[in-house]
Image (cartoon, rainbow, N blue to C red; front, side, top):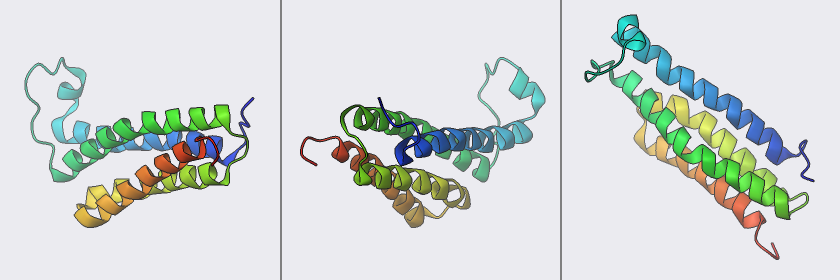
Length: 136
């Protein structure tokens, strides 16, 4: 039975909450920039431009959606084969804090720093997966 109070599961919960922050950060400027009729309509036509920051926040949300399932899978795999791994705990923290940093960095349009934040979060996923390897 996995330890639901472990660092890995705490970071998984925190990352799920962070996902809602990403979603709201993408949705709110989009609706404000395009209006309620667009938001409540069928969206059959291409949307009006909501601005650079809104577009960045939307891309940051999409990037989160691409990495979060990998993180969830890594946590579940690691929890099923390992009991109490410092490497996995550190990796989970790196994923979470890298994703925390990624959102404002992307919104501000800081390209090199954005890539570093993404790399930290991805390295976190790799560390969680590495902790699940036999003999690690």
